[in-house]
Amino acid sequence: MDYTPVKGTHDIFGSEAKQHNYVSYVLKSTAELYGYKGLETPVLEHTEVFSRGTGESSDVVRKEMYTFLDKGNRSVTMRPEFTAGIVRSIVSNKYYATEDLPIKVFYHGPAFRYERPQLGRYRQFHQFGVEEIGLDSARADAEIIIMAVHMMHNLGFKTVNLKINSIGDEETRNNYRTALVEYFSKHIDNMCPDCKERLQLNPLRILDCKVPADQEIAKDAPKLKDYLSEASEKRFYETLSIINDFGVEYEIDDGLVRGLDYYSEVVFEIHAVSDEGKDYGALGGGGHYGGLVRSLGGPDLPGVGFAMGMERVVSVMNDNHLLEEVTDGIDFYVIPVGEDMLDEAFNLTMAVRSMGYSAETPLANGKMGSLFKKAVKRKAKYAIIVGGNELERGVINVKNLATQEQKEIALDDLENALSDLIDPIDEGCCCGGECDCDGECKCEDNKEGCCCCCDSKNN
Ligand code: AMP
Image (cartoon, rainbow, N blue to C red; front, side, top):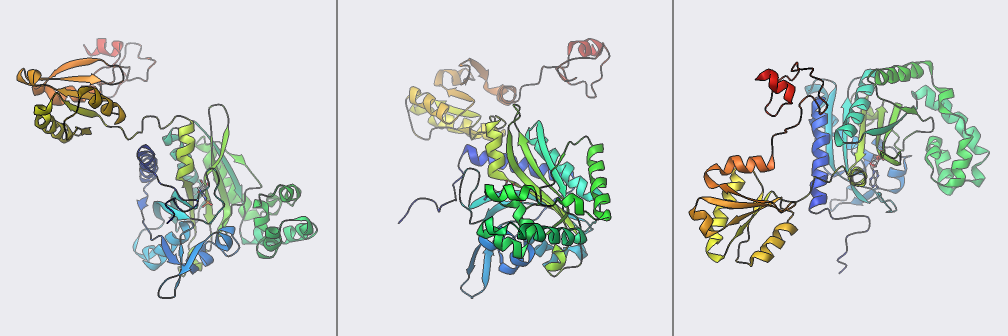
């Protein structure tokens, strides 16, 4: 028996699990701000969902799918990406007939690709993504791109590198394909076996090849922008202009084609950049798609969407210290002073939990020293010490485990006292730190702890 996880898979535990939950919470909440609803689809789909949807010429479908025959001899596949399954769900449930268009959904869960595992590349990984289906407009495309950038800012990234391109409509891609075939046919003998196949299946995929020698050849290949149809060019610049109006910066990358077959018109990738300017590569990407809904048996509806890789987002956020406060620690560790305080400590712990704070207490007797060590190991913010003498006086001691400061609090004021410890009132200026009140309060709520000039006015 091999007790190691399957190659390319990994366990997510404790603080890391909490970080994943936090990131997906921020992403979901942002999607909800834009009116998106959750849609959970099965991990397993009929294989054709991906072969027809994601596309026969994509590397994902050709080489990376976990496909097998189930006991009923049906070919099923563990989703390598979500979009095809989401569209399958919208078609099979006829949501396009019962919901207002566009249908706007978000999703989150594991995806599976048989890729070579390396840093940031797994065989089971998690994606969060969104799809907006049923409205063909540059504004819909722009809104989703703006939302993707908004999500990155909500996660705490100050700088986001948005790479954007248009791969045009069908006419564009047909003309471009012909030009690529002509160009690459002259070089194909010096290219990798995969590119030889790509030339037959979909020469656009060659532009995504990671083999350095092939990338060198691809540098001089015809450029997509020279083949954009008038309609696609107009649409692309309309999208850019809307994004621009919202102050979202972008970089046009005319080599960006994306690896899945269903894209048309605008495509984009989101890169995180550290304060020092380091580009971490793509955390997510997406674009507009034309014939996908129809190819999976639905009406002729367009869509636009994007997906982010959760493992990569969490790792880059950790690298940039954006998740330091998201740990699996607790608020309070309640320490009984001696065995006869176990019941009191247990009852107090339950009371603290009922006030909405996380708390633990040892369920068996232990020495004070080792219980304090446990409190630290459990990453508690505070230790509450429950002693017989103090209880007789109606008080307990609370120790801040970071500063070692200790103070007594009265049990009949427990809820207020704990709330002051965990959620202290912000004493800073509600005008945002640097006060420009000029003695005239601009704060809408005149909240407690407001800056001095507001206070003087309020008094
Ligand atoms: P894609 O569906 O290929 O457009 O990928 C969208 C995002 O998912 C990428 O930008 C990555 O962040 C993430 N991703 C894709 N493949 C993997 C993988 N094998 N392991 C981890 N993350 C991945």
